[in-house]
Image 1 (cartoon, rainbow, N blue to C red):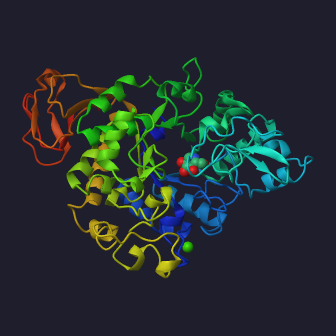
Image 2 (image 1 turned 135 degrees about the vertical axis):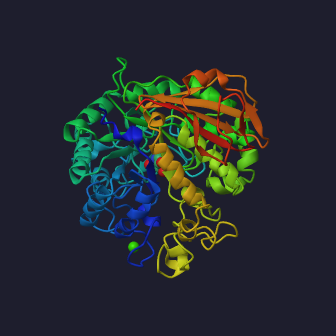
Image 3 (image 1 turned 90 degrees about the horizontal axis):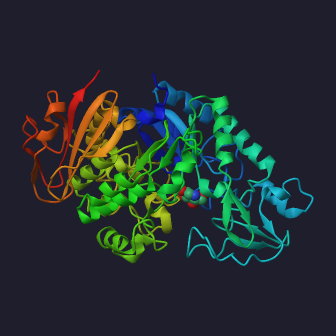
Length: 548
Ligand code: NOJ
Ligand code: CA
């Protein structure tokens, strides 16, 4: 018996302010989200990840928190939030929230107090330096938008550290009070009923910053401590962490050297993300095969969170310059599609030219490769972006529910919306919306529903192993398999435009009435697996056998 619910989850990430507005003020809110839970349940979502919900000056889409113990009044009240948890629970949907504790907003009362006086009880909650740190021009996360990582505060007459924007001062993890406070924040939300946290910027949380020493030591012990605390309070609570570091380092985030998996449960697979995008750009599965081979083994219970898009840019910084150039050339040729020199600020549908075949191929890859899939709202209907918006906001436009004004997102006048709804040719809400696709069994949305149902019937993908099947195959074809206690699945993905065939009769002995459970079109029965056709940009999910 396994209680690792997160290994079987389908996670859906959304930002409350752009999802559904219930009171017509132009800003999405919690009652609006509650009204759409049936939609998410039907799609097959089992866990919602909410981008920051707390009161915030909102200078970094809520990642600048001003009060960890409340919800932003624009979204509703704590009462509304408790109701959301109840209503989601009724539908078998868990809710996790962003835990943004590397830093606070500079408007957080802790920082306001800390900067005001050396005697403030919060002074040591932040990271200060009396002199200008010589390394202050290093380690910026948002090059171009952020000049340095230390800024001078005129009130305190000290420099303070901020790994991100200037208005996001870093908390001091070396201070025992800060460590305890973070635990208290977690306990508070667990008590209300969240299922866990998406932990923001983990490598920076545990960084023991010293002015003038750019390579700060990391206190991994705090992750062990936090995990233990979480599990005392709610045994199946989960930590899903953002740690965008070299894959070899990730093992330490999952657990200590003993391999016991006693820290983070799930980590976003940034490496596979970049490799999938590269593979799609080159129409060649090699980068994915490399990625699968090079990934470190995870401790028991450790799990990857597999994604194509999130609320930030696609980060290509782990690719070589040549690989990155190939991705830019194919998916982000114009400068305003790129961000920070390292990424692409577009949604996937426009990147793939709104080509339904390649969209299905991409999501079929994401959902069949190892780990737990994480979707970003709007991907299921193929929403586009708005490059006229600044930076990462391009992909943070309101959800397109219908052909009604504002895409059914809000009844407010269009100029009062939190962000404009996409109205472009091809991606505007009149063409791309939930209502239209729900009525159409051939729509992308209906396909997503089918794919997610199929995934739920193939638990070996989430809990089992994922391996490249190394057989002679056409270059554009990726053959991989998932094996777990429930049985084995075989997956064929043709990244190229031409039809191919492959001989997999070497697997015939394992097959017990092999059959296609999901495919881009009807194929002849797999038979002896010796002559499997896959169309250009096609895919086949074949069940080899079931044990139960
Ligand atoms: C990572 C988040 O994904 C990003 O959106 C945010 O700006 C930074 N962390 C700072 O919190
Ligand atoms: Ca509202």
